[in-house]
Length: 150
Image 1 (tube, helix red, strand yellow):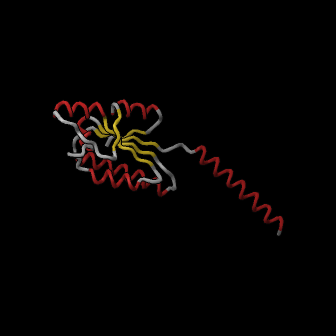
Image 2: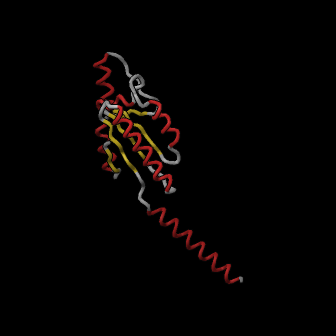
Image 3: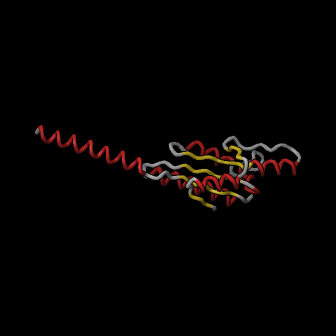
């Protein structure tokens, strides 16, 4: 019986080492989604993609990083005064863990809108400004992120 327990212990250690090696070799899941249209249906489709991606990996016991980059007319997605999806942004931010979701707003677009409209524009608290939305998309793709445009 003693040999059985020793063999079981050796097997458990080998399995643990194998699992740890597999986890270390696993490619991280990183997906960037572009929104460049002032269209509620497109914004909702992008957020549906985020939700579905996070749920898919959650069901597999894995995590994912998702970033939604909005620029041009798509920046309205993150405007405090015009966003038709403000509630969904908050909801998705709150339910993301253990995965990570980021909402990036193009500062070039924001500055252009402010100049055209003649007043400051507030961005929802879930979003962060990036200098350029297009550059952000490009940099993430250069780092190996998968690209999606709904």
